[in-house]
Length: 79
Image (cartoon, rainbow, N blue to C red; front, side, top):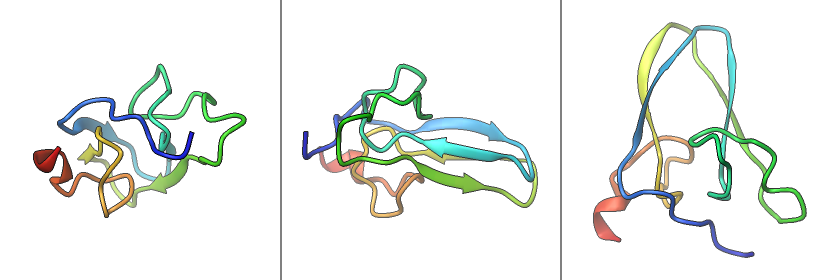
């Protein structure tokens, strides 16, 4: 597996908490999207660790093609 699986062509809106670490799924095979469940085992993919300084709502990439890593940059509009 060299390319990430496109899970959906729109972002995941998630509420995040300050000082908590989140692990965004890069491979697209997690059953707990947009977060990692370990499904990348045996691949070249690793999850991306992200944390926040304040409670917020963010848009995590659902297509796994974003140039901003875990965060949606609109790349799904070109798929």
